[in-house]
Length: 161
Image (cartoon, rainbow, N blue to C red; front, side, top):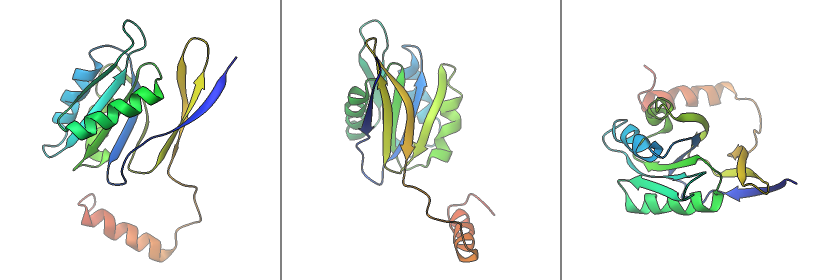
């Protein structure tokens, strides 16, 4: 028997979020090191759901509020070997490659500041992430004006010359 559940990730609009999957107790420390080496200004909290042993939410971070946010969301999600990173003062583009380079990371579901819903499947053994809803539905195709605004925004942030 499988039961599906939708979990709304609790976070403020100005908080960036990464949801992924990895599989080893050292994941927490390795993700911490990846975050610290990504960009010097980043504030973050991360949490990892153990899938065996004591089955605890393990956590680290350099910001107590973001660490607590990660712990609360991870406990609510409760899917084995998932990790969550909540951060400020950086964008996912500054972080994701460092996270993907952690040897035990097997998947990243999303990296966003958007509202996120996680679709969970529950069985008699445990919970699994089936997928994510990242943001809102698409409304149309960009116009020339929208394209120009996109070009300007990317250059404002220094991502394009």
